[in-house]
Image (cartoon, rainbow, N blue to C red; front, side, top):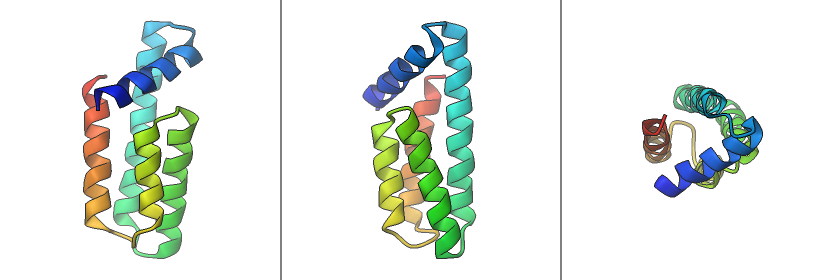
Length: 101
């Protein structure tokens, strides 16, 4: 997962003009936004809510070229609301990314 974090950091650095403090702030905002979408996924009880949260998560991941997160969000679109396997994988990926903050 270190590669994913490094890739995310490189994209954040490019957006922040290599300002380390701004990179940290953007990374934190990225993680918090992803956490919100994963929480919405976890609370979704219908296909529509699940799909909206998964698409938002996928869009967020795509915005920062977080390929692993984008792939998991895509997988979520192919599962049922509340799928514990995909939720566990998403939470683990996010936890790995958050370690580096």
